[in-house]
Length: 481
Image (cartoon, rainbow, N blue to C red; front, side, top):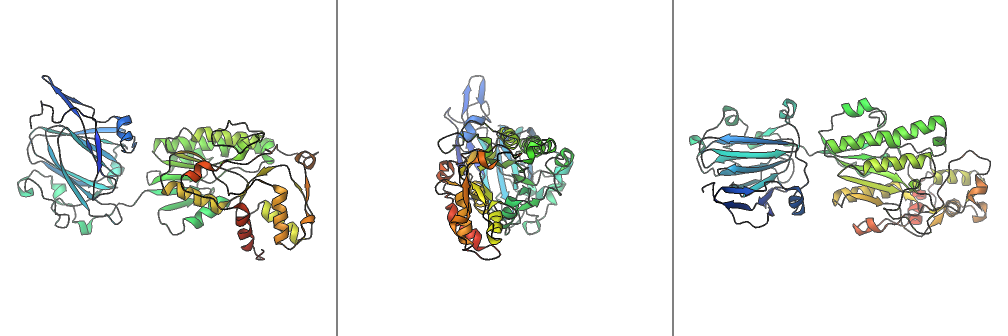
């Protein structure tokens, strides 16, 4: 094919998926030609992502010029995604899946001229053979080359009998490097492990639930605050993020009343905003998906209706203000799930366990009855997070609590007391203003009810809060309800 003529008619680009290697995509590109030569849009972000290519964020463009027909390079699997194409000439491209999993060893081949490009996922081995002289092979990658990155390459021999690539020019007649000739056969190749998920704050209520939720998976790592502190800028910047695709931040400063003190204010802003902003930058720079937990306290609670995800932020106290600032930082990450929840109940100290202790000790508490919302059990939150990630739901903000009608803290307390065998009358309801009169306490939103329509639209249906509460109490040491 003469490269000064248009190889294809000037129609729109199209994308087809490989039928053998998951995630490998073939892009047909319109090439516009006239008497001067031709022109093409080799990578056009809006068009390509609109057709289904990942928004993979290329940071480096490399060109390999090959003077002779039969120049053969590969098979190399690199620790980044690639978008390969031809500027001049023509190649025979071959790809071998070297990722650990069911598709390991699968092969895909196709000829590429300037009208065709291929998106190659991380861990898929890449090779090509030139079919014309003076061929310029070009590729975009979404990480910078480094000597350290080369240590993470995986290789397979071009002549491997198992993958059995039908090279147009026999390898004994082709131009190969000595390194490529010495690559291992498929049976001896090192499989590329999948990128992992890192859970921060793994010792808290939600972190504990996430440990249980992902206990069967070896691609999830957990870090407590002692192991990786979000507020320690040196530790965060020095951490090796290259092994991860996703970070779940389950850590936060949640001592609402103490956040109103001098020391508490500093700690709340450090953990909930400054540290989160640093994490957001890290996730953006490393193309990571960030899952971050938000709170009903970012609202003032004056709405008569359930709060949708896009309701205006209007926090009342320091805790809510620091969480709102963190939310704004998270929203800058291209791949983010901001999971807003309320009235969290899990392992450790929480309202339900406090009420259960009072019931068992014969105490008759006074509980506020004009703050409304829904409980959010950590198991439900963990399941919802896993659902968003597994289904690759659209990025953005999602409200997530258990379902059911709005209820008050006093109603929750009554249910706990009944399950403990106490009479309903043991709990006395009181208004927030009266309950906190004369006390040093942070302001609370009276309405914490979150609209769950968006997460339900993804196919996730949170269980009823009272059913979850009774199940939670069944699991209590005394086996209540």
